[in-house]
Length: 142
Image 1: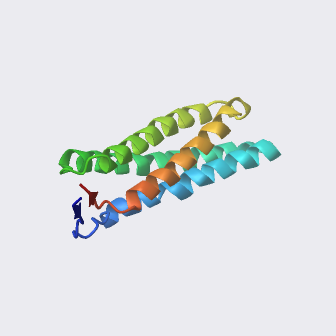
Image 2 (image 1 turned 90 degrees about the vertical axis):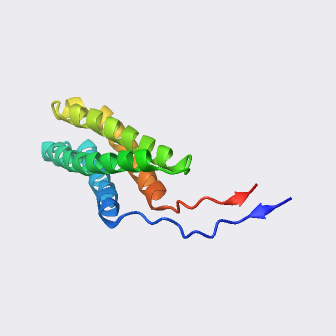
């Protein structure tokens, strides 16, 4: 049995792409915390704050999604990782857009769907950032 090891260094994420990707976590997490605060206090300003945080998160997600699409098109023999990363960002973008539309309703009309969507989008942001920052090196047994 032959074992091959790939000695190429792990490909690092481009710094501007890293900023775009990392900015999604505090924005979507802040929206989740704002929704939790609204569910406990019924102060309408918390839903307004969540709406603005979601809008900001969508801007950064859109640019990160565009960047990952370009990386997916340019991918050379790196099979699963760029596709998984793109699909995570795409799911985060679609659910974030739905979340923004839900938060556009009346304050109480956004609950509980807005809270649930904010939680799902925040988890997707964390997972997508983890996948985006993880090593992209391929190697192992043949």
